[in-house]
Length: 131
Image 1 (cartoon, rainbow, N blue to C red):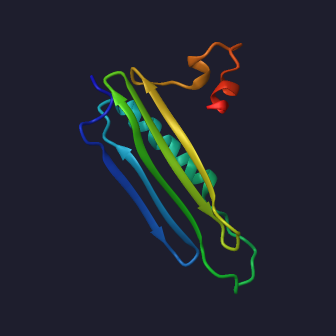
Image 2 (image 1 turned 60 degrees about the horizontal axis):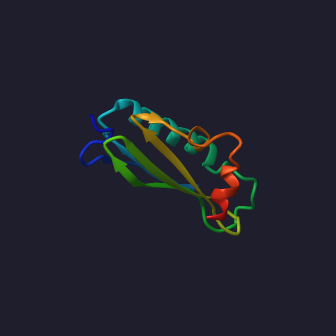
């Protein structure tokens, strides 16, 4: 069976308080529930690691902290699925947000990483960095 539903749902988590603006989007509804669980585990981890912590700043520092997570399905066929997650975390008073990209890649419904695709001696990271 295919790893994804014909049209995966987008789950939206929103929280807007005086101190924090949180907006998280991620896909759910894959035919293989293991993929749903892996995606949810990544989102929980990102939320725990990237949500700005309370700062000891003067009350007159403008703005509020934020965490945004969004995603794109970059590739899919009957045997492979590639998801990209974009995070932007801003701590009130900072000059700019911290932006990151995380990927989840699946072959035959199993998570696969770069080190599983290349020989250990191949210097694949150096070659990929050149691209």
